[in-house]
Length: 424
Length: 75
Image (tube, rainbow over all chains, first blue to last red; front, side, top):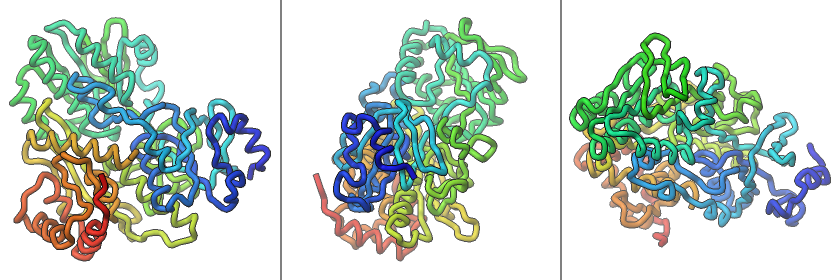
């Protein structure tokens, strides 16, 4: 355990960082401290719910370098021009109002046995419990040439909402009529199964109006559309016809940024005017550094009763970086649901109470097929003590019968409500 | 358990106003129970609740309805 002097010294300008909550300084030496790394759907939800469920009795520090929350769900509408980045951006002030201290830095290292997180600036922070919500990162070295092409903005991936979302929108707008917008999709599992297909749909909707001689080429490493397959395919043929072409078994192995060409394992090269490459991903860098991504060197295995890492009982991992339960998608809604179970478990453990033996999760993913029609995939999950995992409750898993304007309105309402549930 | 509703219906049932997703805070307990039963048996139609309602037992629905009925409807 790190000494207080060392901690304060390590924090350096503690006051500057707004770290008013050091145990002892507030006259509350027994207050436990939870550090949350990552302020996305999972981490921010966990931070808020730990404060709410503990009646503000547990100190929460949130380490997040981005000044504002930018939502990946709904971001495909920004790529296609229906919304601005501001429309999917929310301030962290709501979390501050819950008494959460936000540290606007990147965490670079976890010392698991010492229970210390180190920041990019070199400061160290001690925790009693850590919530690790690092999201995803591209697996390095899988696609030759991708790093250089991304650095030069010749190719965009946009797995993570933010500047890349805007870059991809600009490239789409700048594309000539008659051009090809190609999107490549990695093998499952990846973040948000329907997202690439939604993106292709919305780009096609944009092109149909503004650049109708153009084409969307969907190049999928999978055998088939990996979410809501029949609904997407029907929507594509009804709405876009020849403007959108889907091809399976297209696994990218290399790219050339200058000519915007993708090279595939089995198929001929494809050259595009805008090339959106979605590379294979794994748990975010910090999980990999801490050696918690123990499943295929990609995902973090957790105890689903508490979302504690199977390798470190005081590190709770939530969101896209975990090895998911069967039929559990990597989605923002699911990360929010993980976070609530983790938060309840953390509060119970720190207060010496029993864990909820039968937690439940819900998930709803809305996907737009055009600017005015959306559809859903939803399910309810319950914890099975025998299987030690979450299982879909019979009868709850399913999708829309067809996309509709009503579900487009509900999708936007969902977004505003979930953002408020995470950050409000 | 009520937190499983919050992503769509708002923290403690206080959804964003004016949206097509109903606020649950302060709704009558009986009304919530009737709606959930209706979604489950198919007599009420919905976008997602006909699926989600099947995930909760009678006892859980009663608990949820009692909880949300007592939540303050905040602005």
